[in-house]
Length: 170
Image (cartoon, rainbow, N blue to C red):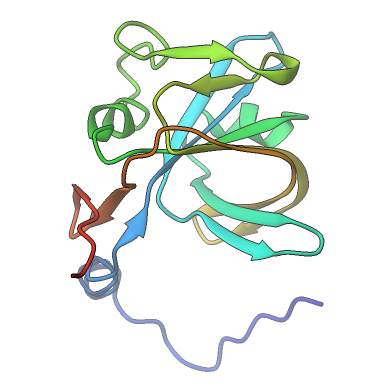
């Protein structure tokens, strides 16, 4: 069941952006093959686990992203959980003026040909479960059908408009 509650006016976009920047989030690159078999991908900082049974994850992608139409139609997705040293990859997968899968991006085809980025902390393979348009983004929920841990390093984080690394508390 979905309900939309609109009893109160929203905070301004500027204030919301400034406030939400205080929240650190993990960084993933969602990859797939488009209808023509070309690799596509987009950085997302809105990744979250949703359910253990069944295993569901979610992420949001801006509807205006050039990668969104292909991701929305993909039958298989990979969620690449980036490692702390992969800020350049995260940035690359936000840009429209580069070949995201060209050099220096290290990747290989995984199951079903889905692109898997190298040196990540983990890969999740998912099939689309549901898609909901919410504001200027689309929320995709995926059913996880495969999971593999990779690089043993710390995760890449996004905080205050910048990428950084996790430092454990002593």
